[in-house]
Length: 168
Length: 195
Image (cartoon, rainbow over all chains, first blue to last red; front, side, top):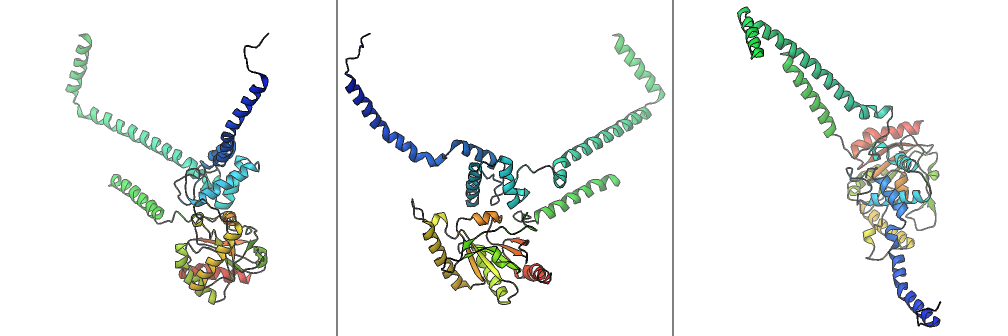
C-alpha cells in the first residue's frame, strides 16, 4: 500500500528531532520542580502519618499543618524514616520515645489511658442510670399524689365521664 | 436541703478540676527520656578544632546538658542564673547550641554550606558568651537540630541532668530559676553524686 504522505522519510526524521528539541525544556523544567513533592508516595504517607501527630510547639495543630520550624524538621525526619522503609507504627514509636505519648492525637489504649478512653462512657452510663432512677421516682410520686388528691365522689365522676366519652 | 447540696458539691468539684487544669503549664510534658540512657551523638564544639564531643566523654560524672542558642530570648533570662551556678562548681554544665544558624539567616535563595554554618555558629556564640558570660565547660553545636530531636527538644532552653552511668535523671523545659536550682536540681545532684 502506498503512503498518502508525500514526505520523504528523512524529512520526517528531522521533524521528530525538532519536536524533541522543543520538548526538552519542558522535560528539564519538570525535573527542576520535582523537589517540591519529591516523591508523591512518600509525601502522601508523610502527610497521613503527621496528621495523627501533634506539633509540640503549637499544640493544637497537627504536625502536618504546623508551620513551626520544629514541625518542618520533624516532617523531614518522618520522610527520611519512610524512605528507610519504616512502617507507620515504627515511625510513631520513634517520635513517642522522644516526645512521649503526648505527640499522639489518638493515644494508645493502655492501663494509663483507660480513664481517658472509657471515662466518658462511664460518665454517660452514670448519667443514664441516674436519670432513669430519678424519672421513675418522680413518676411514682406523681401517681401517688394524683391518687390522693381525688375524693371518692370525684373518682366516680371521672369514671363516668370517661365512659360517656367512649360511648359517643 | 440535701437537694441543694448535691449541685453545690458538683460545682465545687468542677471548680477544683478547672483550678488544677488552668494552673498547669501545657508546655510541660513529662519526658519519656527520664530513666533512659542519654542518646549518643558526636558534635563539633565551639572550640575551633576538629575534636568532637560525645556524652561518652562525661561517663563517670554527674553533668548537666543545657540547650541554648543566641537567638533564644528566654535563654537571656536564664543565662545569668547558669553563670552564677557554674561558679559554685557543683556540676559541669555542657552547652548544646541548638540550630544556631536559622534558615532566615541565609540570604534569599542561598543555602549556607555546612562549613559556613559551623563558622558562623562559632563566631556568633563566642561573641554572645563573651558578652553574657560562659557557664559551659564546652558547647556542642547541633547545627541541623538532629540531636535535638533525639533528646526530644521542642523549646529552647531545655536542661537535662545526667548521672554517672549516662542515664537522664531530670529534664526541665523552659528557664531554670534560682528556686528550681536550690530546691530541685541541687538536691538531686548531691543525691546522684553520693550514689
